[in-house]
Image (cartoon, rainbow, N blue to C red; front, side):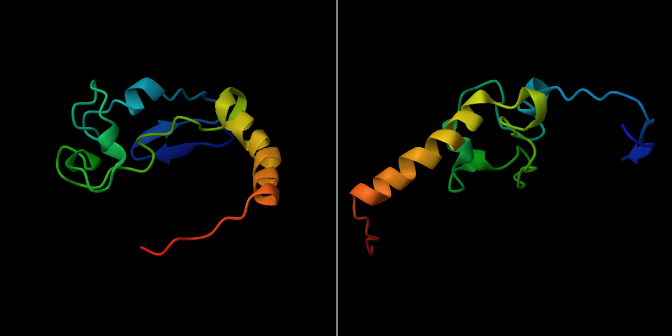
Length: 101
């Protein structure tokens, strides 16, 4: 930390190092229904698993798999670079149209 901070009652001093346990964050039972299970529907807004166990909207930071900094996900960086080459080529070779439903 670059300066002293009071974060919701937790005092963090200048020079302290902070560790965020991503495993615990992404499996928080206050944010996720059955956090130990693989339930892809939890990301579908129409699914009952989309909400917390109390039926509230989840904290947007309760799932942050890519983050940033030194340990940023390699896949995120890779797809950003590949997209710069792939998308222009697709747009040049094909004609895309929006379809009314």
